[in-house]
Image 1 (cartoon, rainbow, N blue to C red):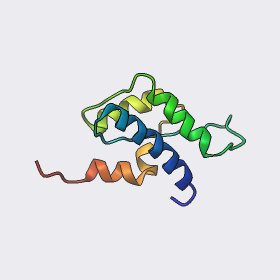
Image 2: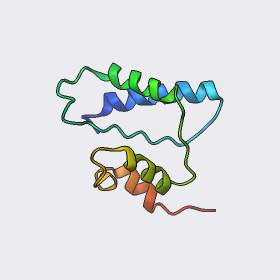
Image 3: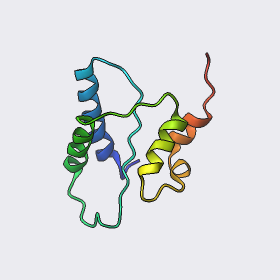
Length: 99
């Protein structure tokens, strides 16, 4: 996570601002796909402002992580292997829950 720590906190700030505005609590999964066109990193402010822009639009909700992942992968350019590259997604998909 050392390479993405700044992006994590930038997105976290944008999400927490939106949740505070909504006066709600949610689990949030943010996936940022980096394509070959993104050749010059501009800093975490791009991530934060991008997250704010997305959150000010129509926010998509899902009842399960599986349906959220299906929805996200339908819009991604490189959807294969997202679950394998993310420790958090793998953990959430296999975590036992007390109901």
